[in-house]
Every structure is written in structure tokens, then in C-alpha cells.
Length: 259
Length: 296
Image (tube, rainbow over all chains, first blue to last red; front, top):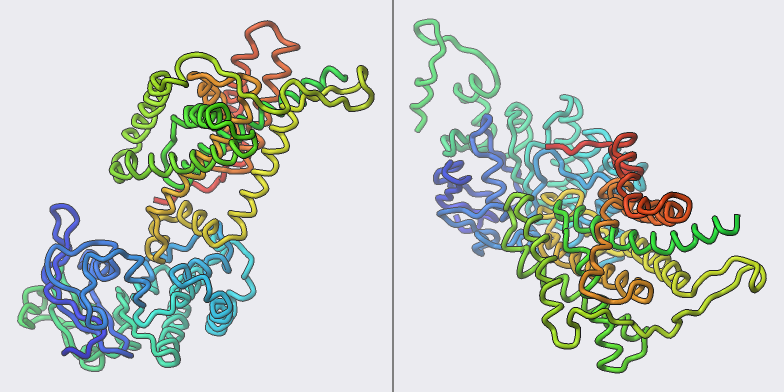
């Protein structure tokens, strides 16, 4: 319980009057890849935003490495080693690839210069294509390359925990697979813990260790991905394996019994 | 021909002033998406601050110049922190109205300060009324040192700004913040502090413009209306482009200067706006405006 690197306890967050997450509790074990699955509007992105301090929770606590981080400044959370790769990449379009990467290292002290240069080379090891584009404005990169840049930029902050929001967004299945393979490599080789939010349940369950299923702001199921892959509800609603009900129709109500 | 060159040089000098103020507009617009209509008045305050350093404290011009720039940077940052930051998240219209109000406030307050008042002051610059002859005394091109100083200082300022934005970490972070504020937040860049520094930078540039312009127009509470000419300069250059602000300023300055001599009386004052109308019809994005429309 207490050895988790990230722990959310009954976190609630809202946009104005609209409650986006209603009492979410989850844990991420150090060194693992955890995933949060859910459909549109389930509150996946909100969870990540609340963790990284972009959004303040109304209730509940968030603990990172055993310390409460809710309602902290995003910059301070990044400095503690928790970086968020936002949905839709959000790179700096007019800065060059290299400058984008340097901005990822913004929270590191300026005396780290040599080490940052070294880390940029290391990141190019994961994404060789970025090395060829070093001095090109990031806005000219393709969608996949921008996603690679967004992940690399986050790595430059030397995170111990990385939040990835929909890394597969708008990418071909082949590219998605490539990106996920590199994400796993980053996890294994650099010991970076990952929390991945995905709509593409198929790919997420394949690469992650542990999964949470989120529905309308609540966690409705959590288990290891190997188990989740075999559950009927997951197969039906997220993996698209259809099963007809008793009366020949698929009913939503049926899956409610998992609580 | 000589006459023409003469006009181009003096137009370019005034154009540099427009360019500096336009630069102030552009920096704030790019970073915070709001137009600061008090930009010209910041310039006026800069003129007064420099004047006070010189005549009240008896400092030499260039030291007063530097100190005034530093003081203006402080004023700009304080304005952002005290007046504009609480407005974060309000509609752009609100912020624009507030900056217009700030302009009025500055003009009013300046007349209430004992030494500053409503009179017109002369800034005792060391190079007052000096001229340089190019191509033979009495026959060649005559350039007043006041104009020359404006051009040289503008070039120096702009190149150092370019180097700052291109090569320093803070400069790149400022660019990053203006390109994608949200992403800057995610990367742990202190967006609010950066915005404050941009206001400081913008006010400092305007202060420099005020002190450069002072020998020509004198220092008085209404000298900030030059800002109204700098606005077209920013638009011609494509609002939001730094090189655009410079070129736009030069174009407006030179056109104005030529129109004042070759065209009938009165055209000079509206020349800037004619240029901007033509520009909006022919190339709505301005000379250096980016064609990429904003993503929602």
C-alpha cells in the first residue's frame, strides 16, 4: 500500500459545476506500467491533469513518493520528477526540435548543461528520426514524430514517473505499436514508472502491467492486464469482441454487476 | 535625389521609434494574447523618468538612459503583477479596456507629479543639435546626430534582443510560452513569471524609445500618442512578428516622412493609416504574419 510511487485517494475534480471525476483512488507501483482505460468523457485526462497540478482537486489526496502533491504548482511537481505528456502532443511549433528538448529540461539547474546535452543524445537513441530533424521547427514534423518529440521532451526532465495521455492519438496502428514498444523500453531501461491513459484498450492492455477501468468519473474495475484482457466486459466493450445477450441484444445493464 | 535620401534617413529614424514601440506591442501580444494600449504612455513615462534622473539627480545622459530602462522594466513587471495578473482568465476585451485605462491614468498622474507637470521639458542630451555631413560639408547628406543615435541604438537593441531570444534559455522559454502556454505549464516553465518578465522587457524597450525620441519631440504628458502610429507599424508587419514590427515601423516612418514633403499638407498625419488600410486589403496577415491559423 505505502510502497506505491503514486497514490490517489478519493480524488474529486470538476470543471465548474461539471464533476469530471468522482472519487477516484488508484495506485501506481514503482517501475511498472499502469494504464487507465475508458471511453470519451470518462475523466481520463482529468485524472492526469489533476495529478500534474494543472487542475486542483476539490477533494481527496494525491501522494507522490509518499508526499502530498495536490494543489502544488505544476513546476514544482515537475521538479519532483513527475512529468505529464499531454494529449495531442502540445509541442512548441516554432522552436526547433533541439530547443523543444531543452525546454523539457527547463526545471533542471542551468549547471546541468553538459548532462542535458548528454541526455539529448540518449533520447535520440530511442528516436533516431529526431536526430535528423534537430534544427527543424517542430511544427514541421509529422504527427508521429511530434509524439516522439513530446515523449522525449518529457524524458529530458529526468522523470521518475511519466504520465502519458493518449500516445496513440491520430497515429497509424503500426506507429502506435512502435511508440508503445519504445515506451516499454524506456520503462525497462531507465526505470521510469509510467501511467498511460488510452482509448485504444487493445494496445494498452497488451503493453501495460496493471489496468484501471474508468467509467463516468469512477474506477469500476482494476486488475493486472493479463486478467483484464480475459474479462467478458472488457472484451465486449473495449476490445470489440461481441457477445449477444440472452434475448439476442447487448445490454448495458448487464455489466453493472462488476461492482 | 539628395532631398529624397535626406527624407528617407529622417523617416527611418522616426520609423525606428515606431518599430521599438511596435516591438513592445508585439512582445506582449505574442506572450499574453492581449494588446497593451498603454504602450505609448509607457514610453512617455520612460521619457520623464530619464529626464528626472538627468536633471534632478544630475546623472550623465547614458547612465540616466540605462537606469531609466531598468526602472521601466520594474514598472512594467509591477503593472503586470498588480493590475493584469488578477485579470487572468477574463475576456480579452476586459484586459484591453484596462490597458486603455492605464494609459489615461499614466497621462493624468504624470501631470500631478510636481516637477513633471503639464509643461514641455527638454531632455539635455549631449548630442543636441549636432549634425554629421556625408559627402562633403554643405553639399552632401546631412544627418542629425539625434537621428543617428536613434538608428544605432535601435540596431543595438534589436540585435541583442535577437541574441537573447535565440540563444538564452530564458529567451527560448519566453518563445515557448508564447507559442504554447499550456505545454509550457506542463514542462514546468513558470508561465506567470515569464509573462511578468515580458511586460518588463516590453516596458523597458518603450522606455528606451521614449528617451531616444525625447530630443526631437521634447518630453511632455502627451508624447505617448506616438503609440498610435506604432500600432499601424505592428499591423503592417503582421501583428505578432518581431522582424515584422521592425520593418513595419521603418515603412511607416519613411512613408510619413516622404508624404510630408511631396504630398499636400495634412497627408503626413494620415499616411500611416493609409498604409495600414492598403496592407489590410492586399495582405491581411501583414508582411511577416504567419499564415497558420490558430488551432482551437
